[in-house]
Image (cartoon, rainbow, N blue to C red):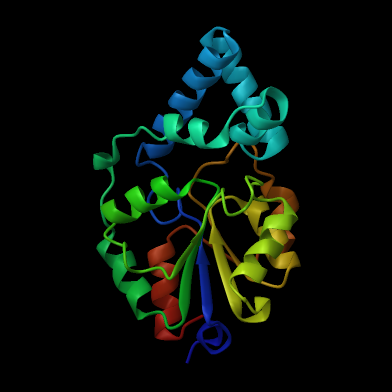
Length: 225
């Protein structure tokens, strides 16, 4: 039996660019809508808005947090506006869905997105009934990964034993606090570098790296990892 399977009873997954391909186009839609929101809310041109969007994402972990801290934006309104998306462009990864089904134990989503976006994506991925819980940005008190406090809140809320928990994320620096609280960490190398990420500094906190989450879980299920 797999070393991971022997050890793990709680499987934690990021949502966007982790459970579906980073080149799907969903995040590009969100990026555009965020720029438009910032431009309209601050009454500035789109070029200036994009610069602020990028700066806040880098400094605050999410554009939302920057808009909350600096401009008092209502988070629920912001999230509803920037998730008016065309979800028809994503569909299920049958191989991934089969591997997820085989995993024994709890499966939980931990995302910087909001609940409605998560539900909408999971429906398109045909994973609606796969996960026992969703820890979204609202449950995290709008404090995004990789801040350490929501990880501790996550552990408390779901009565998690960190030593028997594994976390998957496409942003390497989000796995640094995961490793620090005791999780096993798996970085999904999606083939691009998020401009807010710090892969070089995060490397020593990554237990595993993979370019294909389906293949990785297949190896786990076969007992090869």
